[in-house]
Length: 288
Ligand SMILES: Nc1ncnc2c1ncn2[C@@H]1O[C@H](COP(=O)(O)OP(=O)(O)OP(=O)(O)O)[C@@H](O)[C@H]1O
Image 1 (cartoon, rainbow, N blue to C red):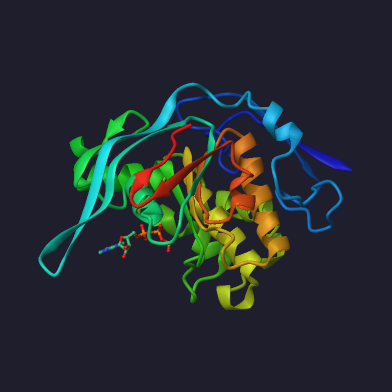
Image 2: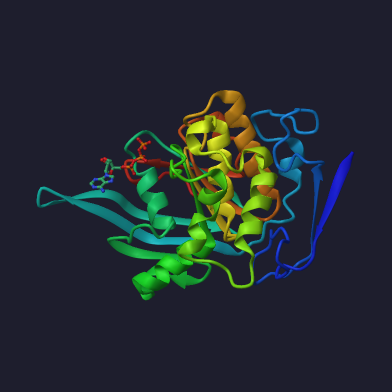
């Protein structure tokens, strides 16, 4: 039996919010009953690596508008008084609704690039524009707010707070930034249901498996309904089956219009994305 959820009003407390603030669209999401984005009973959700034909043909949610623009960006670190260049003249556009994989060898600058895209760091030179806003023209406070509302992060090591429950971890970002009119407690519960952790809400990270922890991290990343999800080796600490389930969650989120940028060194995992860019020695080797 399937449950149909019709999401109409993003402002009503308790609603599952899957829309951006600016695009007040009606959206239908069909989920297997009680399973959210994860179906542990396997049937309706095939865990298969690689792009499915359906995925490639159904890209109606993608627009031609770049949501991320990286323009002539350089990044250096100062080490022992010396400036060490890490990224050289990076130019990259990510379209709204796109699923992009960034690949490259260890030390090539992938995480550095992701930190810049996620406004966790500022470029030494060049411009980064997220949703039309130029980081160079924003104060630290404005950058923090934009990051808190529009960007969700998922890391290889989950980065959950050990003494907080899954539910408390998911709610945590809303103490710093939250969208007005949203019941964040209810939304955190809905998101945990969505990732299949309804029965683990009150467990602490030490009582969860790696896959469950990563699902909590994904729910946390979605708590403020960000337009962009940034994932740095999200399956790096997981076995292949669990990693595959996480990738399927990303795929569903992307089908629901979320822009995803994922770092990976694994070509098979990168094959899940719409497009792959290669970073080598601090240079983007291909932009298409
Ligand atoms: N805060 C920092 N200070 C100095 N050097 C840094 C800093 N962060 C990263 N680096 C250096 O920048 C280079 C690129 O690091 P980065 O983490 O971006 O690579 P990566 O491609 O993500 O690697 P990996 O796949 O191993 O995670 C490395 O040589 C690293 O030592």
